Length: 63
Image 1 (cartoon, rainbow, N blue to C red):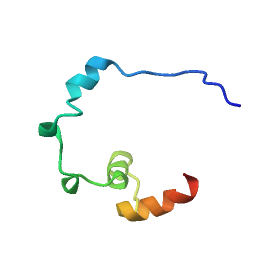
Image 2 (cartoon, helix red, strand yellow):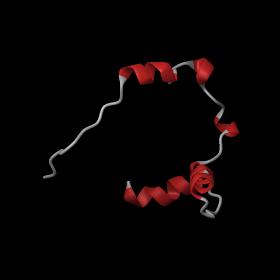
Image 3 (cartoon, one colour):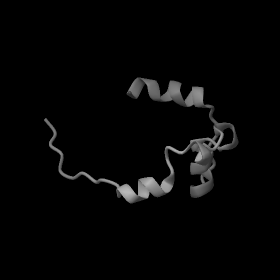
Image 4 (tube, rainbow, N blue to C red):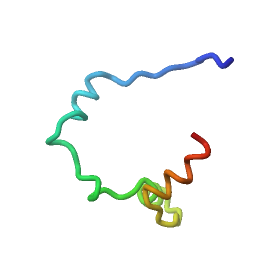
């Protein structure tokens, strides 16, 4: 059995300031880059494009 050795909570004020549940703050997903594209841009790695469906198929065996 694994025991929890550390747990981190996020500040409630930060969640409220983020407007996480506000419809007005939401961005259409079609306008956002994929997670792979964001990682590639932030790390400088050349990562091949991957659709959401391809990513879900790749993750499925490990879920």
